[in-house]
Length: 576
Image (tube, rainbow, N blue to C red; front, top):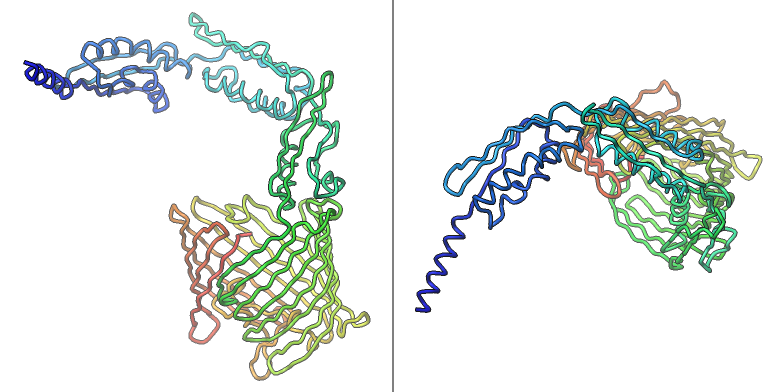
């Protein structure tokens, strides 16, 4: 008997499982945003896959649909919808619910009253916000946009220091007889708080240095942007492993917000190692050592060794923050560079000092370098001593330095020497460069670059290779070897020129991914006269947007060489 009951119970359960009622819901007559919101409101849509759904329950849910559809349309300004609905059995236990929806006329705003307190009205940020409101008199009343206005006011008040601001009135009158909406918002901001004392919790750097990073004055109006800027400045200083900048609580009867700063220092020593390859340099490796914090004055030290198939370099720099420590530093440097190319062999030893600082949006570098160089150019060898003052300026515009959609970089530098002051020859040299990136269509970029240089001297033959102009390679005129272009001697050996002129135009297309292809045309040369012939190169390449910059693999043809030989160029780096 017990076994019979169990068998009967199993059969009943099996029947229940395999006879589950199902329904499909079809909605038509409205736009996709409205349809999506209707489905969120419809109980029959939310429960269509419920294992306990039955015909009786299905009919009850269908009866609720009209009220739910009406509620779903109201946030978008539709209060008089007309809905034609049906519920049909398609087959046993399979149903179809259909709703043909006419949202009806949109309810519009007849009156829009938004007022803020006097301190806010005189704040330019609130003035801008109110001038760009998403709702106006005569617009369809959209409840989501109404809530967005409220959120924008509250968020801006918090960002601008109106911490006691509140809505003393926020209501919407829906008049279905007149079929119009009346909106009333009154936001009172009370007093605007100001920056109070900044408390620095650290014991590794002089407090006077750290306070030069603060972008605001005590007593100035509070802004969240200034607080974020302060934290970013301390992060960028590279002195600290963690930086926490947070506003405190105002004291009673005070309108000043104290700022608390907690800093954890970095380790005293850092090491770096890198491997790479470029057609101009061949295989290369790099080893670096840094001391981000030498002393409590914020002095730094860094050194680096680079080895490649065409030479080596060793550099050391001692950096002292000056003026604005975020952007300005005095650098004392020493180094040795050896480079052997197809056209020259040189070893340069330098010591010098430079002041790097910002002038508005421009970066400026003023330098004085003492340089000794041993060089071989063609069949001529020599040694040179130069004391070279120099100055350079650069500026970059763009949305990203790594991969720019639109950007521009401009550089200009001047340097020289005089044989009356330590140097064994006199010269003056100017060099400028520009690079522009534009995206006329999605996934397509046009890249144009150019450079020009000029040297004035009466003793060109005495100039070492480091201050002569050579060109050719992946960064200048592709299709030619690195530094193989320039004036030649009687034996046809390249000896470098007084002048430089290069230009390039390139088109890139990306395939809905980080991979792309490019075609390009380059022209340029080092020369003794600007009327000399320019070398030309043309080709195509492959692009990949890596985290450290675009990887460029190019195949270029040298159009001005016999047979138009092809050469592969590989280069990795940021766009600007």
